[in-house]
Image (cartoon, rainbow, N blue to C red):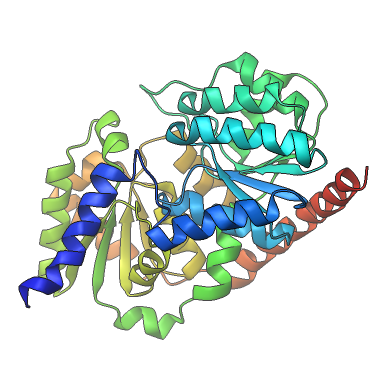
Length: 360
């Protein structure tokens, strides 16, 4: 490999790790410019403004793409990550001034976390109408939940709300204590991924990658040793003549990440969306359960059981799990498609609501 071919990779790695968390170019300078042009061109007349965390978290981004697919409106995109806070407040005020009948469509991902508290306060302070789509509660030992009184206000003021699992429904209903409908539907990312990347069983069988999708802070809070897990999974891959690849699911190029999944024979994932993507594609996967959101996804939408990430530090145990899961190609495509169709019915109410708001 020539030295000059490594330069773009090195630049991208430094951008993703050191610049993007503070100055997000949305994948490239071209994407950044196009996004600004879109804002100027659409913000005066758009029916919806989509709000999600950022384009660097593949799970959050494909969840947004799934929501947009359901809603069917080409609105502007705004971001709720802390680094974008001042810009968000500016655009919320601008929409309020020049396009007050626009509906804010907020989701998906785990936006009910304390890091997004200021974002939700900004939404509640605005007079703009909003819905919450495909968001979930992230509950785990050592990590705080969003303040209950704030969650209660969000549920009260939202025109429509759907969450991605039964645990999120139960927690929000307990906090809110009203009869307000909190609907539940599978993560919108499933519809986006499944429609484009369902993998035929025979094609999965010839794939040769053991993909490890990890969330370093979740593994740490769960008491697991990331380096030991990596070493174990590398050993399993080597013993089975497979290529070991690890990925954090953080990237400005979501297409390349999804392509990596399509080439995988099995996925070990401590990230929820690593499991959701695998489930959507029909690829065998091993859920490494660090928190209740992963458990709730499995119980609500699959027949699978999760595994302790600490157990994956042990080569004998991890090898047994590998042998158990590698040939589980029993994904029910019809069931997955039924889940996405049920979401379509839910989101048909959103289309009516958006039109009603816009014509006032």
